Image 1 (spheres, rainbow, N blue to C red):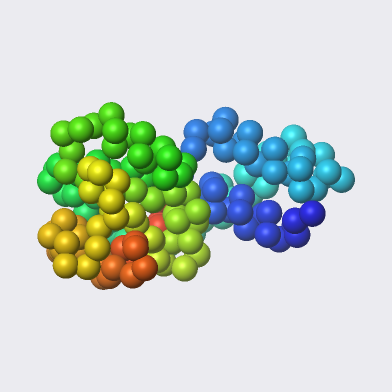
Image 2 (cartoon, rainbow, N blue to C red):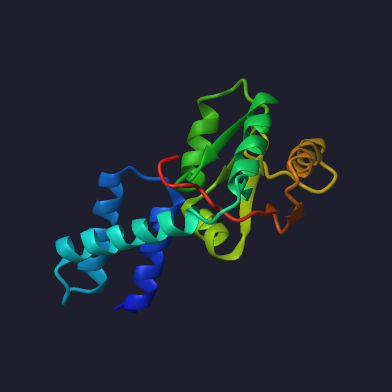
Length: 179
């Protein structure tokens, strides 16, 4: 059984990520509550926790600067895409990234990250990003494609470095409600 605080923290991150529709979000939260906290009424608790997370998010967002790391990240990812790379934000897993890449043979590669990567960026201000070549081979140090993507992040003012097969971008995921 999962600790209540852990589940509530996950709900908070799930809501703030903005990666799911309201129905998908409710379904995920309800299923987690039913599984991890069978003593709680799943429907009521899911609705209450989501509403609380949305209210906290809106309150916090009202104090954020006009331009957040999320805004800079979106600009960088738009530039990456303009350079012929596919960008998948909140990609479920590497199988999904591989399938997307296989259906886009003209792209130069793919930049992708998962919902847990986003949750980490919400809490820890660091987004781990995968960069693959069209063959699904990871980018590596000395790779021109890696240097190009790192430069795009740098131009947007987002420090990034390659470590253990992924790009670590110093960025807090501060997506505004409704974006």
